[in-house]
Image 1 (spheres, rainbow, N blue to C red):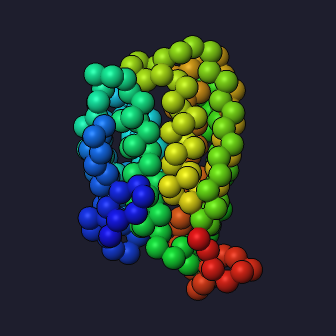
Image 2: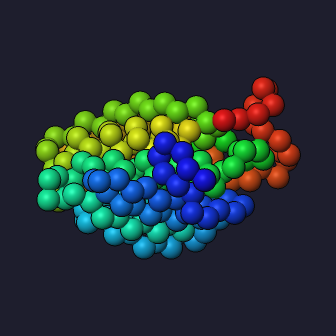
Length: 206
């Protein structure tokens, strides 16, 4: 099955493998919601790998990302497309989103920095990001791409995402944000034993 983001290679209850191939990138993401935080992530952008590892570890998602992109130009296409495919894999793994908690929130400190993330995985894509970075890069990753990553993930994943933080160290602030995203997603995608249908008065999500 294909959509505007990529192609679903395989999927099952609460897991999916999605690929995207363009002239700029070739991306494959496998996401298992009921995992243990195991990861294998190779995007070619070290700091981005670090952030995705932090997200998966704290979400208890099993996540595999293999990416080849036009890094000879810059990091933008690779980072953006990984975020899009990750969101698409989340959407596919959630299926009709019935029986899940739907909402999640977390606040995570890292030394002088703290980040708060609130999510709704009910299918409404929207992102508000307020992370006041001081510099231009962390490793090889332009920090302006952090906002774009979160917005792209929210759009393809059907996630309403609010991220706010403060701190003096850009590495700490970004890492706190992705850890908080992981914790909030872990809560939101959890199966609610008291709910058989959608967590919505409309009767459906998406």
